[in-house]
Length: 356
Image (cartoon, rainbow, N blue to C red; front, side):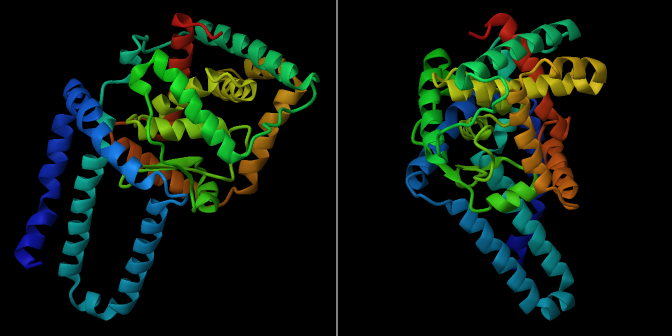
């Protein structure tokens, strides 16, 4: 590739950024022509091509690129030092191509119509509504825990392996499609990440590879939380990018599953977010509500807390900060805090469509 072409491609990142931000001002356009138009076609093709493979092609590509990049830097360190400007230009070129490919393959979904608008939900909730919803969740979670175990002090142990959880999640999406056709999911490409240990140290439950459209789930996650995480990653795969929205989709598909273990996982998941929001504003009220949980439910939460604590490390905040910046750069102003905005979706959805 000649130098002029490289310069042109590198500089094209500037008009690309401007164009993406301009198109992002028109969510209805993005929704109609990208999220519900072009994206389902290209994502469907990739899921058909790669979904049948038992391993993650995207993980292998990422690992290979990292190894090749490190090797290139080591082998060519002297040449790079003597030709720094062309090297920096080539870095910008790679970023430009990556930026274009990312948005072409998946990234424009960050600018689609909000899920709350599609469901005709309010965009806020009151403290009273949150407390009423949380008390309802406590009763339902306690009731289901006892129904499963017949012992208020026994934690719920989901009896399925991860492959079975994947299959049951797909069945849940098939059932949910009858209620919400826009959440339909076909030709699954759902895989356990080869980087699960690294993801755990980074503090993540999974991710969607936007370049291969493979949904990656952290295989180390305890089964208590695994169903909702699986539903979450598929939510990304079908074109929803906002973290609060895919959190909600993960809850929804798990909560409406016929399996009682899945229902319990979903209720406990929603309850953890509701209690967390209450705790951030009123510690005493949180303690009062938490004390009402069955000991068995508390043990499930403790299992999850101990799991993440075992992998806590000094670099985790760094990874979280990088991801936080990534989210803010992609139309999620609250960054990682946007995960917690699921509470508004949960409360307003339940007000309109009460949990069964």
